[in-house]
Image (cartoon, rainbow, N blue to C red; front, side, top):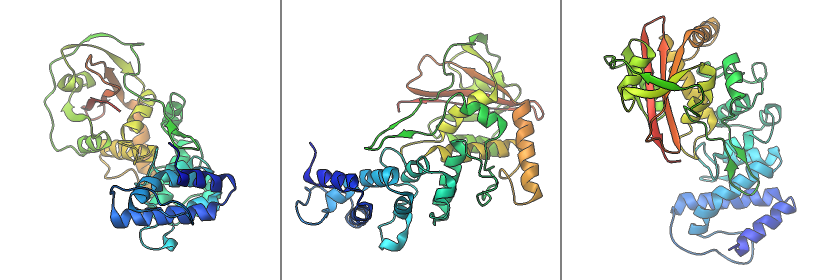
Length: 341
């Protein structure tokens, strides 16, 4: 049932009264922050006002509408603290997805860059624009971890297989490809796995993999990829096969989108931490020449990496089964998990 306040808000949006809607959002969010979620009904009539329950319920979808449809000069103010305590959206505010990602899908970086203040929001918006194919290597401030501001060749190739950024709808909701590994049985065949390799504890890349996909298990072994897969696979004989890293990239990025509060930028940043850790670097890059050197190491790693994927008969809607082998070090990492979305 569409309430009086919902009709009123839609009318304001249709009339382009975005400043009033921004004020309503700020009031709703401040109320939600102050009171938290409680039971109650909407306040009817008069100016746009919200009781505590309506504040908690209405803030997120109203923020989504502003981020999606308002002019960027207004939408960027969702994250501006000039409205007072508790009124600004944070990086975790979301409806169908995080509000910063909704905004990032609507406008190019040159429109948004002069308007965005909070550094965490700027970074996530910039990384989202990169995932959408925009080259920010000359137009944005360097990433704090040295993650490149344009897609590398293997990322661009993977993006052609499936875009990890949600497609948002004006009135709420989103469309998103369900990117899984393996995506299908095509190219897979019965494989007799070897004995599991001995686990190597304490590897930074293993921790980074576990942080990337918090719903999956991650291990590191000494030996080829099938030895790592054998640690997590459902049996000695699996349906599996090798694939290029570019085909694994979309699923790995989406693995980092743990819930609606996370966007695809979180996944890309987390994956670069994994790759940097596999090279032995503490982070993907550092300012200056070291930044370029670390990126070169990641490039070399991806070029030589062997990737093995397999099926699990118990797979649910979202699943990821992948072993990553670095022939240069003799180490392999496996990540495997399945969950309902």
